[in-house]
Length: 165
Image 1 (cartoon, rainbow, N blue to C red):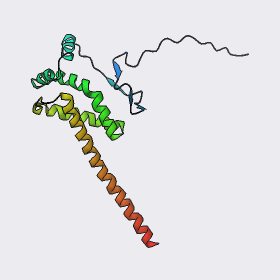
Image 2 (image 1 turned 30 degrees about the vertical axis):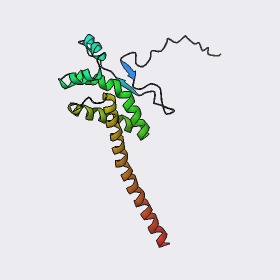
Image 3 (image 1 turned 90 degrees about the vertical axis):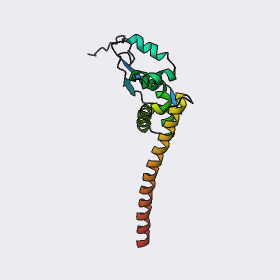
Image 4 (image 1 turned 120 degrees about the vertical axis):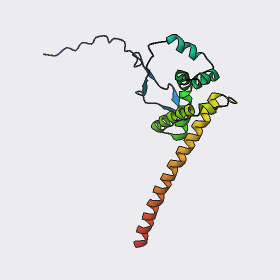
């Protein structure tokens, strides 16, 4: 007696972001794909959806002015606009997804705290890109020193072992 296996047509799979989830970054970064499960939950505000659409259409300088006037949603739109490029820069410099995500988050925090000092002599993207570059360089300096200290300690122990022999 043989068991029959029947196959049924599978229903079309919904994309993982159909229920409010969306991928953070799409595409390639220097030949490597980001993990497929990297997702961010986007909470949609229940009230004022028309205002958000109007904010999306505003220039960076207008959004900065609104953020300085006490409207944090304006800075959220700026962060959404430039999140991918800041993360990509951090990933290119650090070569680690987790560190790049941490640096990107730090960059937007620093930018928000220093938003009043933005003089509008350059674009917002140039300003925040420079903050990201400096943050990555500082991160690399901090961790390179730790690596060299560990490396020097390893070689010192190794030199002592060869002297004893």
